[in-house]
Length: 76
Image (cartoon, rainbow, N blue to C red; front, side, top):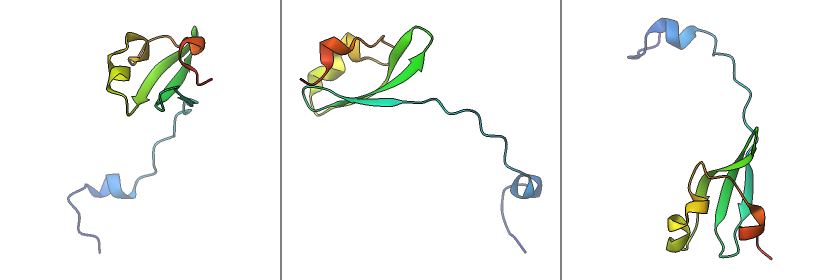
């Protein structure tokens, strides 16, 4: 016996087909932060930023949706 607030048809049904997951890429910034990039038809775009530097969050080039220009931010 299963007691749940979820309808039985949702509990016992087959899981939906899993869509093709996007291949994300993590890049380390020179200041120690990380940028998650998502591929697109016109190159990579910023998907996520994780950084200990507050000024990285103010950089328009690192905002989600921005096109990625690697030579500006790669660790070197």
